[in-house]
Image (cartoon, rainbow, N blue to C red; front, side):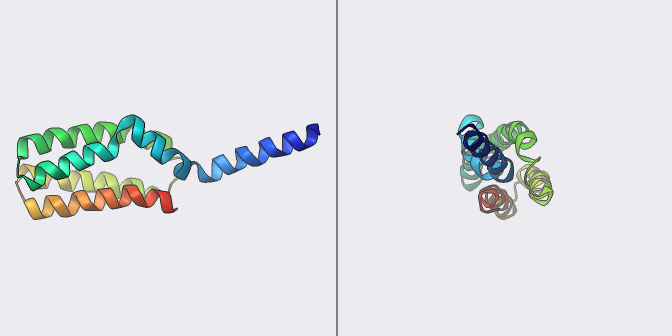
Amino acid sequence: MRKNIILIILIYMFTMVLCSCTILRKPLDRRYEFSKHLKETESFIKKEDWDNAENSLKNSQRAWHKVKPILQVDIDHDYVNDIENNFDLLKASIQTKEKSDALATIYLIQNDWSSIDSM
């Protein structure tokens, strides 16, 4: 009986290590509201409210910097690099008030974030 319990615990821990990004993304998102901040940024861009878009982008980046260290151990670093590079592009698009570029970039960030679940 004791061996079975140990085996179950080991299998559970192994599963957590292999699948932690999928398991943790949603609770982390609820805690740090990364998706919510991205949606707010998208909304401000659509309204061409550039000051609020820039502030919301800063909130998104703060949330990302809290989530990233937890996830980057387990996810493909290309996702991390893509999100961070797209943040730079998004910041430039917001500062230059390029609505179409800003929307395209925020959609890329949102897509990369949601794709983490499918790994």
